[in-house]
Length: 216
Image 1 (tube, rainbow, N blue to C red):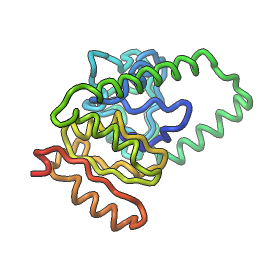
Image 2: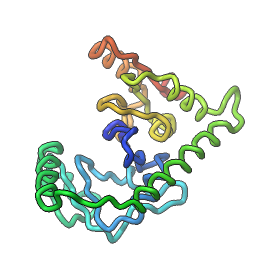
Image 3: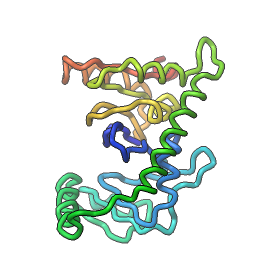
Image 4: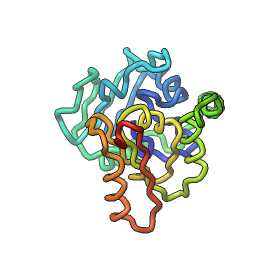
């Protein structure tokens, strides 16, 4: 549920799982036999079924990396728990994989399947946004916002459906671009968070996405 953690323009990026996330991500995860979870709590809210898709693979072996030992295996049983910094652990795993498989073959069938899922989901997002609204469908606002945002834009999103739906529409290729309240549930978070982000990065355009209740 943090779609700035991985660059959206990467060929293997499929978007976030979780409430109102990406169907492409959910279908990709659904068939996994091993899950490498790096720096994520795998929270219950972030792995619940959505769009009638029960996507989290119950029988997959989970390798969970988190710097906080209390998060390891907290919501899902893990095969391997690694207590450590996300980047340091990832670098070491990558180094060992390169040693074992210096020239791995690409799974072209898997790459094509991922690409097809992404195309289908992107089209569905556009179709949903174009449905009737008064004055426009809220999804349309997010779609247009995505088109207008420059590369270095920062977005803060409040709690509720506005934040969750933003996960599906907003695209980031840089880290620390999406500041979301997530499971803290603190209503009214987005506007002051946007002010703080603007002070921290004066040259970056900052957007606050708030629902009517949070704005009130």
